[in-house]
Length: 254
Length: 254
DNA sequence: CCTGGCGTTGCGCTATGTGCAACAGCCATT
DNA sequence: AATGGCTGTTGCACATAGCGCAACGCCAGG
Image 1 (cartoon, rainbow over the protein chains, first blue to last red):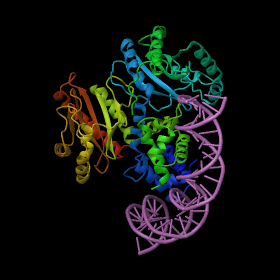
Image 2: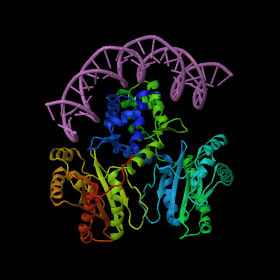
Image 3: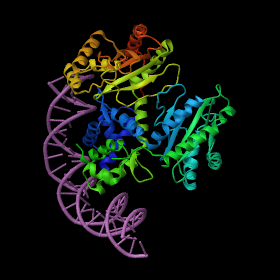
Image 4: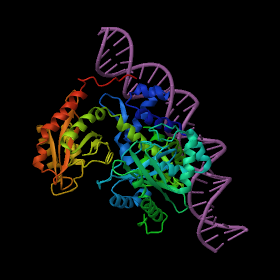
């Protein structure tokens, strides 16, 4: 829509692949060097791009700060966090919270066993969307048409023998998940890791997030992990309740 | 330099504070709604901005992906990682790698004790620049003028009684650190946490990164931690050597 | 000393982004 | 139901703001 901005923003993914000098950027954008220079300068002023000692450009630190801030301010995350911690305390395993956005599923919170410090692993890195339990829940709630379209569009990497092999299997799994209201990933991503997940719903009943408990089967078997399902669902429901606005959700005063 | 891009990018920090609707964005940018709309649309197309169900705009998932990718591609990080892991294996404590960039210090890698999985904690969140051992090393290497200017500009929050209280103390500490070639943080950030850090240098001798080992003093006393200093320095030197280009650093073929 | 490759600057042209004003949906009020 | 106010959205005419060009400065290699 806006040519200049469009060009400028196209530089970011380009630099994400690795550092590049002015000429390379100009070439790949298909614009004159002087134009690329002005765009890069503007990006630089905003800290999104950094000029390293060899004069080449890299993505800048501000990008991390922005991503971090954005993450902190997600309302679901804020509401869910204490619940995740509590769940972690009572079962000891790793707890994840994830959302769906624009064809991608990403973790927005994680509480690791034994470590009270919250830490963000793999944030932004596309989650294994075809196998992760949380992804199944999030996608299962999409309108049928969109779900179909997305399923067709996806790749189905075979992480393990139990990975979802193709779109038919995936759509079928999504239907099951949709009906039962919870999901699992039993060794579909990493051979030895199992997960159980439950959805967090907004006031309108739509799934806004999904949470899961993961554990390696050297610690607990898949059957034992499934024992936790009621607890996971109760936690998810508690978050849903709070998110829907029953409880006094802080002062939203300006 | 480029007005349009400048305006568009100004939207990002604005949204980082929290979701906003079109009117708010337009107001805070000081432009017409239609202009703001076009900018937001362009940002949206690039996935940097997301439109949530209530029509308000938020920062988008692509931002996280970019930050993540950028992180992965840092050459120092790539080179250093195996060294960090080895150090972690031999001492068992948390190991950090950090860089300085444009008035900020940020962690770019971390290996946590007992967990082989690498995870990025606090990435992008400004490190406690006035007390962290790695920050001292990175700032100590700046040209004197820049160091002075930066020190004056900083805030000196008193995290603990041992935090650096003001710019004079900080500059003095930096001088010491500069001379001795290593740094510590003994409870300056969190009462019970100590760190020892050593610099990673490029071919020209300038400090390009800094690494540290941290441990709570319930596990090891500060004195015991200092015992590790030679090991930390040796590791940092090994990384420096590799980074300066002595060893065959993979194929950089396109 | 010259040549080639880089980043940088100034400039004139017109494509590009701008603000306006009118439109369209959506809710709450009456 | 109809009204008014609030959003977000569209089309258009104007001139500003961004564009490519060409010339310059700089450094490294021959």
